[in-house]
Length: 207
Image (cartoon, rainbow, N blue to C red):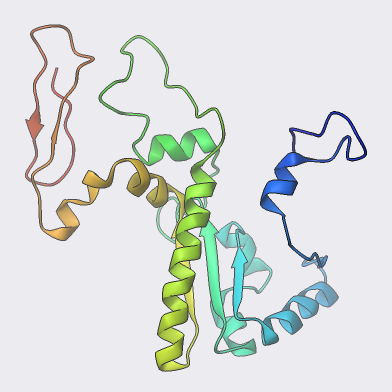
């Protein structure tokens, strides 16, 4: 149901979005609100290497699909959760859109913003794509760990953190021991532009 759609020919009306992101997939429908649906998912998980899901954390727990339940079904399973703000923490239950994820990740507060206009959203929603790419890489790291230990694990991917790393990697300076963080603000009036340095690793915009 997601556009754009093929406009002519035998495939007219078919979703190009689905063709791009659903290519080569096989589909099974599980109604996870029912016991039969959950049992079908557990049966698939017993034989699976990876499970990727993007449930809101409280929904995942309500359905009984959190990591302890899945680990009991298959201790070697790599369970990857892709969430807006992580599976726990103060924002775990917050609603989100692509725009708010980019804002929370810092990318809408760049040096080049227009001082008298609201921030623009991305032309194509990308926050979840960055999170999905991180999820794929993290799942492979967990797989290599499983080859050594024989154990699966839960991988928790925050889309907010993914977009921060994708566009503003310098914000990670403090956690790795480099606390100096400089940033220019060309949006400030002429003669009032300066770079602020923060010993805590947090950015300050001078004006």
